Length: 124
Image (cartoon, rainbow, N blue to C red; front, side, top):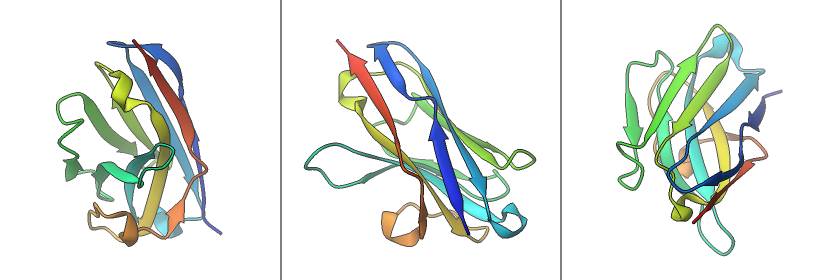
C-alpha cells in the first residue's frame, strides 16, 4: 500500500517562501519518480516539478523555473519542494505524486499514486 503525505503548506505573503514535504511509504525500495502538481478550483491539475529516483534529473514548469526547487532524500523517503519568490498565482492545492521506476515523469497521467494535497495560499 502506497501512501503519500504532504505537509508544509500555509499562508504566506507574496515574495515569501515555503518548503513542502512529501513523506512516502509503501514504495518498494523507494525506487520511484516523484512529482509535484498543483490544482485550483475549476482548473486542471498542472505539472510543477519532477525528480527521478536518484535525484540526478529534474524538470520544472516554466511558470516556476528559477523560483522552485525539487529535491529528495531517499534515506527519509521524502521529497521536497522549496518555493521562493512566491506569487499570488502560485495559490493552489499542491499534490505529491509517485510512480514506480527510476525515470522522470512530467505528466499527471504517468503517476499512479497521489497524496491528499496541501493548501498553499499567497497573499498580495
